[in-house]
Image (cartoon, rainbow, N blue to C red; front, side):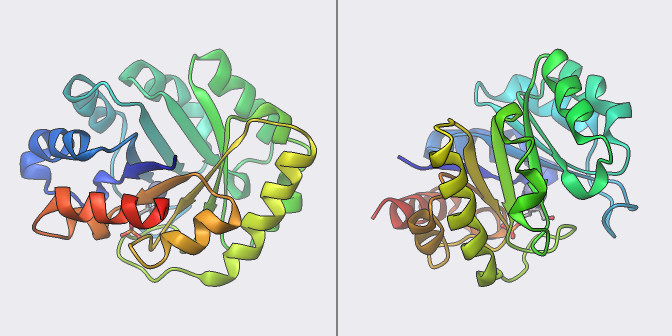
Length: 218
Ligand code: DX5
Ligand code: ZN
């Protein structure tokens, strides 16, 4: 069974409550919240108040993707707002081990994210400490970009590394996921999928979400 994490970045913010509830009813597993600071990535999006606003709308885990510099400064703000998973970019964390421990000590499940060009070897010494690894299949910063297929070899490499060590780390994919691109990612070993525009960019969110999930489970 795969998991789908709709990204509210692509949702209609004027009716965020309905969007989240509709996603939940359609079979979403997590809700993905994209946090961008205009420094680590060339865009500004949401912060802790968005997490706080979504928290009472759903019982689903809130998966907070921090595309920010200096994430340590804000971890507590996000856990207090109700984050269940917090992922940080290896590229933004010179003291990644410390950041991961901080997330866990604040009560959330920690994950590490890699940009498309960052090798899997960058996290070989942190794998035992995280609950998930997110491999970006677009350059972070914007929704609606095209899936980068060369990341698939990284998915396979990571899957092998996790299996060889008998770990329970989840592999998440983010960027350009749709009915066509999810299949190869599942085959390569990923289990959790973020999708923004392929769900909230469609008129019928429920049909879109279910079609992607079904394509991933075939
Ligand atoms: C990109 C974000 C993604 C984005 C995905 O920087 O991390 O989560 O919302 O959007 P789609 O599915 O449209 O590529
Ligand atoms: Zn994301």
